[in-house]
Length: 213
Ligand SMILES: [Zn+2]
Image 1: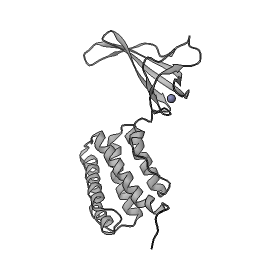
Image 2: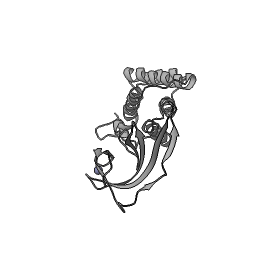
Image 3: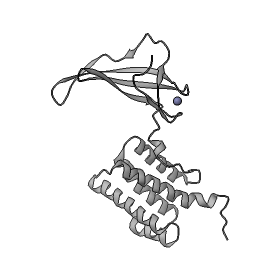
Image 4: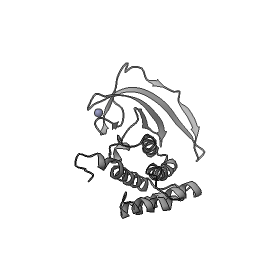
């Protein structure tokens, strides 16, 4: 049996057809539920579980299919395990191997927050990364605004990077103090800028072409 819709394959890095494997005559499902909607109507829905194989690369994944009735028509949405990494591939790759351990963990958690659409935590996490960089480099200053300026004064980051880190600081402040959730595209941009800053600080000196005279 083939799933009704294409789902994302982490290996093929695109949406592909998936075939169910195992005993195709048995559907593993929750009993149909009836849930009251906002319009005071009943919505029929069920969960169906599949073990599937990608039609393109044969990789296997577990799929939870949410099957629901809308306007008298059955529709499906899917959750997969392993999780779809589609959103993770939006983040520009950098090498994390030179990061101090605490920064490594923090960066990974911020990426995971973005991946899981936990945008409040993502925004605060980005600000925490800026603070962690300053602490790791023993940058002086009582407030983060001063520390970012001093990062620039010490020649560790450029004027433009400092400018953007200030924006990330302000975004984190707004989220922490006013519970403002920033838009996904802005957070993605913040993550990619932070990644480039991390590479500038922790990656460039490890490249073969760098020499310290
Ligand atoms: Zn595939």
